[in-house]
Length: 115
Image 1: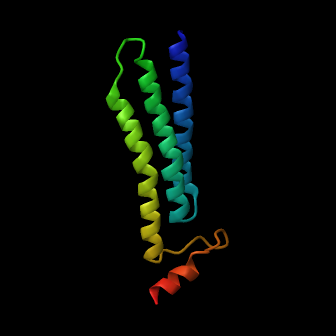
Image 2: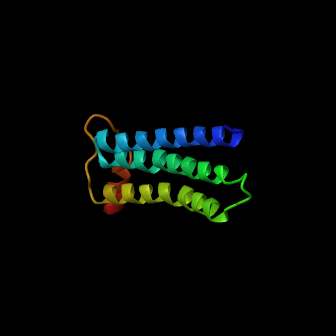
Image 3: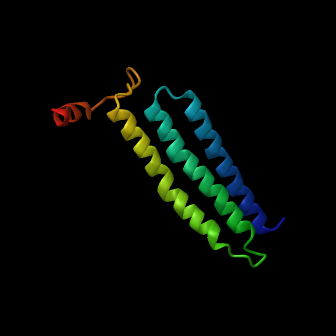
């Protein structure tokens, strides 16, 4: 095994770990806000790490694929932002928080803005 294959394997293991952790979080967490946090943060890190493994694997062949780097950048910017927008939309539409687990500091400001 070459050094590149070892580094690629490490990145694949890390990416797989974070992607599985994200899937477990989406299944097990109590409300939409926590689930979107798991989906937006750890899945982004997992997929970006897997794409970095792909990029690193093909470096010795002389193929520098700019499309993979652009996809990493695009995913790194858009996935957490879309999770934020889904959370914000759910909050403004009154989706309830999980009971006894989250303190809602924004509720007072939201009610003031509604009036």
